[in-house]
Each structure stands twice: as structure tokens, then as C-alpha cells.
Length: 92
Image (cartoon, rainbow, N blue to C red; front, side):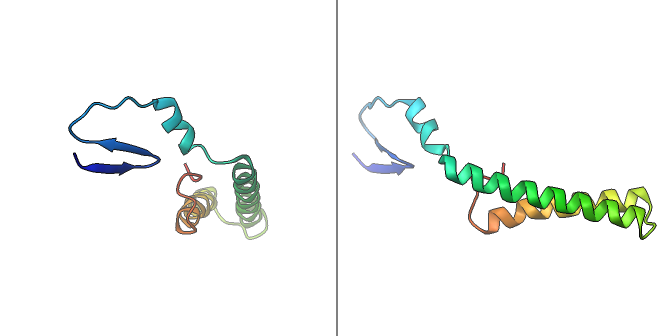
């Protein structure tokens, strides 16, 4: 029998073990303060990106396609930034 570590559950090869999949799924859910903090940061980044794209469209005279590309670039790379900072579970 070889014990394996699978997240928060110990699984053993060679014998049947019962586990609760609901407990495993609850272990993947982040805490409320983490959700609140990352939601706040994401909202600020999205509003800032949208404001920048709007300002480039209105005041700098960029075409709509370029401002849309800029907005998507900033939003997608903010998600990459969340992953780099270690919030893999939060940037879905």
C-alpha cells in the first residue's frame, strides 16, 4: 500500500477508501476575504482599463478597434498578473 497525497485527502492504493467529493470541492473554494480582496482589485483594474480605452478613443482619437484591443490586452494580462502573484484559484 503506497500512500498518495491528493490535495487535502489521503488516498491509498490497494484498498478501497470512501471520501466525500463535496469536502474536496469545498477545499477548493477560497475564503471570503480573499474573494472580496481580489474582486476589489479586479474591479479597479477593469474600470481603469475601460477608462484608459475610453480616453484614448475620445481624447487621442484612436480608432475603435485599437481601443478595444488595448482594453482586452489590459484585462487579459491582469489575469496573467493574478496568476503570477499566486492567486491561481482566484483568476478563473
